[in-house]
Amino acid sequence: MNTQTDLELMSRIAGNDENAFSILFHRYYSALCLFATHFLQDDEQSRELVQELFVQLWEKRRQIRVHRSVKSYLFRMVKNQLINLANHRKVEQRYAEMILSENIDVSPSQYFMEVDLHLKIEASINALPARRREIFRLSRERGLSYREIAGQLHISVKTVETQMGLALRQLRSDLKEYRHLLIGISIFKK
Amino acid sequence: MGTPKDNTNEKWAALAKQLFDEPAPDKAQPGEDAWDEQELQQICETARQVDLHLHQRRFAATRDYPAVEAIIRKQNRPVLWRLNRFWMRIAALVALVLLLGSVLLWTAQSNWQTVAPESAVTDNYGRTRIELADGSVVTLNRGSRLDYPDQFKGDIREVSLNGEAFFEVRPNAAKAFVIHAGPANIRVVGTSFNVNARPTSGEVAVVVESGKVEVSAANRTDKAGALMLSPGQRGLLVGSASVFEKSTNIDPNYLAWKTHSFQFEKTSLEEVIKQLNKVYNVHIVTADPAMDQLLLTAHFDDRPIRFILEVIAMTHKLTIQQTDAEAYLLSKK
Image (cartoon, rainbow over all chains, first blue to last red; front, top):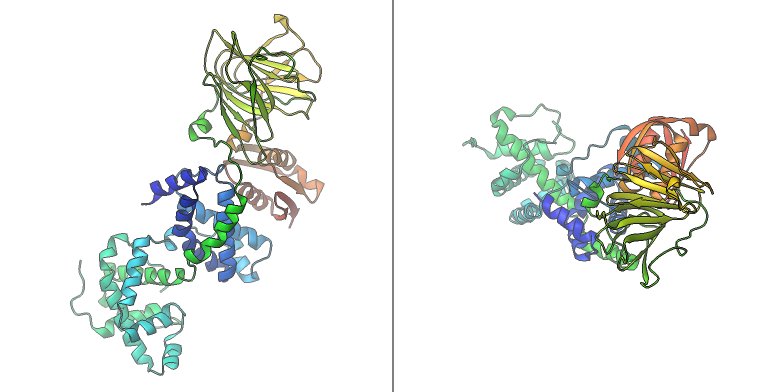
């Protein structure tokens, strides 16, 4: 979808276009951070890693040649950097093992979404009634269990269940038109 | 799309609980049968995307970009030419690799005294692309220098090289193209070729990819001293010898400096490292001399040095230690 544009950006970057560099950065930064933190479990370290990667990209802008997907290229760079860190034991033992033992599956679609979809999702969440939104965010942003949410908000677990169900239903209905962007597989473990 | 008509709130609550509660309930998917499978998949995907969106908000690009911008602004350097893809695709009609010894003599014989020669110099970051007055194009390797005139006067096109370069010569039968590379002269009527002249090895090697190239020692002016090279052949001028020796080129990687493509076929680690050090301008060492005899069979096509090292490390169960910006230590696990 963005391939053409990404490649254009890369070629403009090679010609010292800082503006193009900024666009590429804004397009992929958070997705790459999220990918990194999935393995590092450390937001700060992930940030550093991805920022350093972009600095290198700028430094080597004239040597870098990407033929197909800039997106895949960037994710691969992160992956290599992760392996590098793990080798240098700068990663917590168990995560280092995960990085080095498994082949990290670089599937950008698991981390990257088009900007439009981000905006649409943000709008949909904001459209939830305040209380429902609060419960939903505690669950999805903070990763709290229903029990923990109930305790924190002094409500019953049953209420959390109901509100979460309503939130899901509402988001599904709001975002339905984006169905064509769905890749049709779920990564939720059953 | 078959959205079930009778979606009760309970049904949604059960699905949400299954997707969102921590830890996930053990009970085997209550009521899953009630969902159309496609519908269920799409809901799961929506939930995943919402999660993705919320998690990404932790890493706001707008907040972190200024730091990166500050660094790249500071590091901006003057720009070299960038190799375009067309250039990289030229697998060369003729490629000459000259490993040139000691002294460089390009100031000696030339017919361009009337014209101020221009000079192009690469730094240690990359290759330089130069377009000559006749439309010929030269790609210089790092640390190399080409002297050439603004305009080619007379009936010959002459340039001088110190270092390594790849030439694409615009054909012109009436006006031969001659490269002076230290103790060697390379004469081409019109084709492409690659030249390397580094004043360290004491020899000049010319490898021909295709086409015909005439090489001769600069101290021989008679026709008998000239050697014609054909594709796949390699001419070697050692030290102060007055004739090139002809052999078959056996190095598949002689153009690696330009293409960053390597073919290793049971190549010793020692040799692999030697080539990588040269092409990537890095300093790789092994912890134990015994490791030098490890063999590598692999093909790399324009991959980062780090990637190549990872492959080597995985193949032989080695660890990589980055000891400096461009220095790596390989050791046994």
